[in-house]
Length: 56
Image 1 (cartoon, helix red, strand yellow):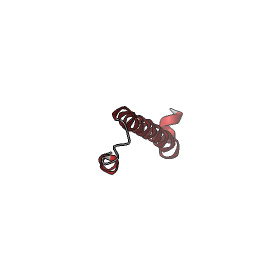
Image 2 (cartoon, rainbow, N blue to C red):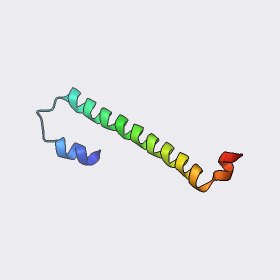
Image 3 (spheres, one colour):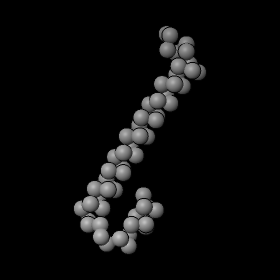
């Protein structure tokens, strides 16, 4: 979020707490989305390319 910090760096209307919460929420959401995408890719990859592994 270096770009996001650069964009909102001049906006002093944002308080420190709300700015921190915004960054924290972005990090948490990004982590959850990344984990979900990796899980979905692994499941679909196992079903599509490794049927023998699932059947055994």
